[in-house]
Image (cartoon, rainbow, N blue to C red; front, top):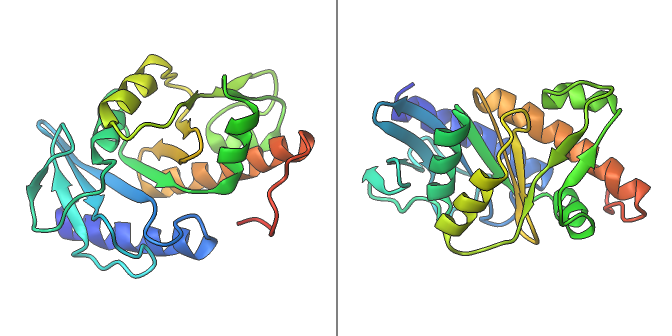
Length: 205
């Protein structure tokens, strides 16, 4: 995939997530891995309405999340995208601002435990007898701090990270798999919130 193709795919996914209310305002960012030797990612540009991105509103970044081409600034979280792509071997990473994960993390700061739920299949795990713990890390404006926290709690079988009072990162082999996993995680964490008496208002979004 080249940068133009990546930009087109990222713009389409951003519009989809914005329509769900998961990338409100200019929040959130997405990336796809362009190459691994050296590591290169296409990341959505900073400060733009994610519902109206075009194929040119992306930036190519390196191993550290620093731009290597283009005139637009990359997302402030590009360095964490690069860290996830490297450690988890992810082909795509989506960073969304859903309310359900943030509420679930508030109630479960040590990690959100999921078990015996059919929707876990869509998250890449077994529906029964498979305890899934989605890591929760404290928020920080320093991507090195967040990256270290992610890596310290990384489980290859759990493709998600919740940043407390911030949002969620979900990854997959490609953008479609990352989206499917994010959709399933939203359902799972709405279930957790409902059981704990803190369901999010306003329907699915």
